[in-house]
Amino acid sequence: MSTFTATVASAQRHVLAEGPVWDADTDTVIWVDVVRGHVYRGALIGDSISPLSDEGFDGMVGAAVPGPDGSLLVACQDRLVVVARDGSRTDGPRIVEAGDPSRTNDGAVDPAGRFLIGTMAFDEQGGHDHLFRVDHDGSLDTLDADLGISNGLAWSPDGGTLYSADTLARTIWARDYDAETGATGVRRAQLVIEGFPDGICVDERGYLWIAVWGSGQVRCYDLDGRIVDVVEVDPPHVSSVCFVGPELDRLLITTASRDLDEAGLLEHPDAGRLFLADVGVAGIPTFSWSGAWWRPTRHTTAS
Image (tube, rainbow, N blue to C red; front, side):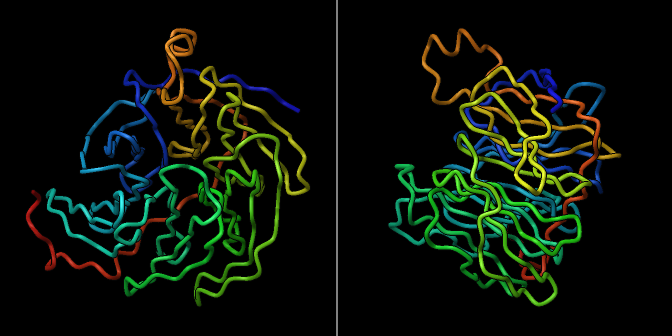
């Protein structure tokens, strides 16, 4: 087993940085601060992420992914919103029903350009959280309705397996996935880990990299469930992970300052910052949202 150490890569300290995505079309990183309700874009310059833009939203933000024509698809607290290149915004499908004490959480795009998004109860008790897939026409398919916090999502290198993190169950689920038709297989437990799995990504070998909340670690598991690499991160609350850079050969890690008391914040002054690690392996490309149910003629003026 190899052990690596992550280094600080950003000056800004977030409350709950999450959902990093490498946008290959613009050579930039997209990530969110869930609690502050902000979506950020930054450039990888040397060993740091230099901020480029910052979009604020009402309420919390679960995830953001790149779309067509320079747009962003944002999972706001209870619905999707498209931000066009000119800054105008269009409301999309509602994800969380009115009165449901939940919010959106981690999301990702499948190989066909559909968006998958999970939910998380405000009280974080879990057991009835959902994983939805937003189809090309904007309709919602329910993949799961019994999760103990729906979290990170990733696909195998061939796109034929969907992995999803269920935090309170300490489980990474797997299921067969046909992106062309949308058909999915029976959910099965790929990994049951020690700790609370949060964000995940997959490398070129098909191995899973898992941000383990509360542990100060990102762990890499092979498909037999063995830990083959560990990245040590100073803050304990490691929230998500992705491969970034033109060669997808650098591991970007998000962290949180949330849930640390005054002593904890003093002990971990870099909690909430972004981190980078060089782990000797590359990731696989992620996908952009197709924009199938959105058209520029539907834009409204940003408020």
